[in-house]
Amino acid sequence: MGGERLWYERDVERVIVTEEQIATRTAELAKQVSADYQGVDRLLLVSVLKGALMFTADFARALGRCGTPVELEFMAISSYRQGTTSSGVVRILKDLDRDIGGAHVLVVEDIVDSGLTLSWLLKYLASRSPATVEVAALFRKPGAMRTAPPLKYVGFDIPSDFVIGYGLDYAEKYRELPFLAVLKPEVYRRVGG
Ligand code: XMP
Ligand code: MG
Image 1 (cartoon, protein in one colour):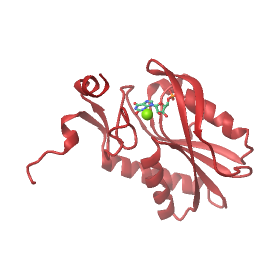
Image 2 (cartoon, helix red, strand yellow):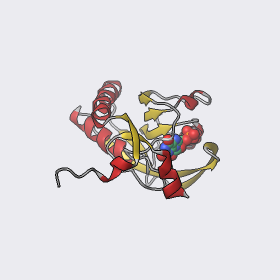
Image 3 (tube, rainbow, N blue to C red):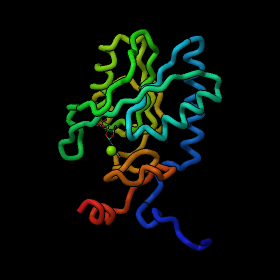
Image 4 (cartoon, helix red, strand yellow):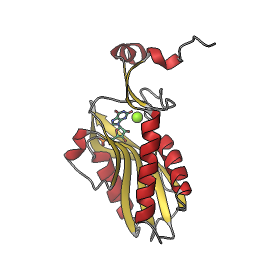
């Protein structure tokens, strides 16, 4: 099997952030969060599915290594898109299972583009009366500057190209790639067309 190429190598144009860079940065963010939340007895990670799946799993374990206990909640939301930009209109596909009143909430996001989805989510969470709400986003695109919701922890600033991997998909594919990458243009013709 030695000489065989991995199945995704033919689809990936270039890697934007490597597996190693993600691991290193995740550990740094966890260290920072651990220091900031010292003495807090209930740190609740609210993970936004599906994209934040990989980051949440690695980030939670990195926090565990730092000795910071966390609880996990999941939400699934879908933003209606007008072309390639988000409209800010959001639908809840899966809501919180528990009351977050009084909790210190840290929203775990995969990627912030215009910031409209996040702005909506922060308003929604604030209406549930948590003690505090902050955001950890692994990737941020330049567009995020426009609406600028408070992003306390950011992993990487990346170009505005459409990216896949490490939880992010194109047509529900490529989430399992361990790095962040850009696809070859021909893939969109093949898969989407
Ligand atoms: P906004 O513009 O509201 O959008 O900040 C954020 C959401 O849009 C999705 N998104 C992407 N998904 N590759 C993806 O697979 C991308 O390059 C990308 N950019 C934005 C994502 O769901 C995010 O939560
Ligand atoms: Mg998606």
